[in-house]
Length: 168
Image (cartoon, rainbow, N blue to C red):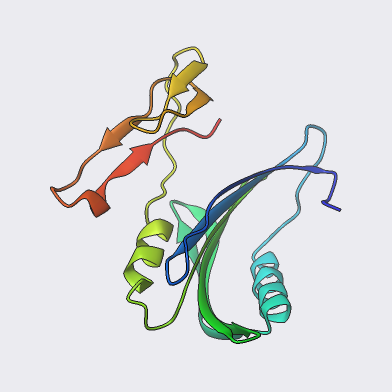
């Protein structure tokens, strides 16, 4: 069972065979609870992933992500006959934790896609607009948000598109 002091949300895209799987987990301490996590927590997360995947860590670093403590790690694993690489970023922002994970098959050419997913997030200030149900650009999916999601194109290459949203 999940720790009852946390509200958690999981957003995922699991690709087909040979594709990239990506997911983001957000956790927020419930009202009245206090999180005492520090950078030692990052070691725990890395070690838990190593143990559960029977993986070998190939890179690990702690750093600041937009002024907040963070870590990144890459692991190679093999489950039965399937090999994979996990890339992860974990950020602690006050009473919130953000987990960004991406998996791909080694040698599939998807390492850049996995890393692009991890690097596609940033914290933005909330606008003062009232919250309503809004549509995500081009997806037909509605979210509770302060304004419409905006699709930003950095180049003519559609793989450089990203959608901007807000964390309350």
